[in-house]
Image (cartoon, rainbow, N blue to C red; front, top):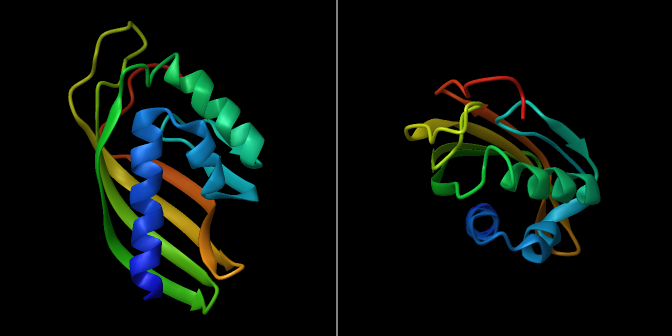
Length: 137
């Protein structure tokens, strides 16, 4: 049951990310969540993550979509903490020169915590296999 709920949160994040639905995306995060984006940029706290997301959606991620996020492993560190490994594919990412890059694939690691009976994302680490061209954006 918890594994199914965790998989749903990961998919809800992908759908919200693609729809630029910042309200839903924010609702999936703990207040003290953190991220290291696939671009190498970091943000700490729900509001800062959403600010970074909005900024990157007008830069390298403008028009980009997460084509898939496949959960490859869930490991419960404690009954209320799960490490989640995923593989992703993104299309439409822009390189430094503005050109649209070919399909990007990589890994994203999540830490989810169970709070008030539901699972929330506490930490995200994006690691592209395909190099993101140019300086951090």
